[in-house]
Amino acid sequence: MLYDTPYPENPQSDLTPEKTDRNAEIIARYEAGETGASLAIAYRISEQRVNQIVRGQRN
Image 1 (tube, rainbow, N blue to C red):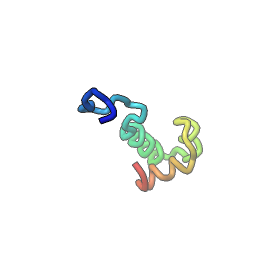
Image 2 (cartoon, rainbow, N blue to C red):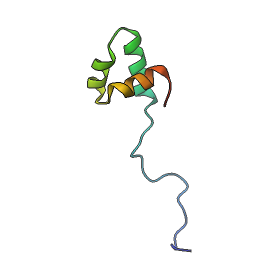
Image 3 (cartoon, rainbow, N blue to C red):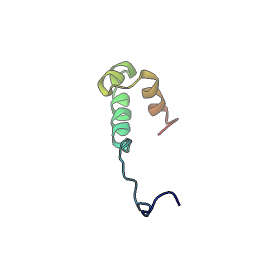
């Protein structure tokens, strides 16, 4: 055994938090008529990522 301590029960880092709330907001705003480009700027993500979220291709 490499370490003398037990493994943690839960992850010790939340560097990648769940983005389900953000994604739901993006979808709602897109359905309300906002463009993918404006959403990409607002959320600081790529327009391609916005399209993936809207189409439900990735979480």
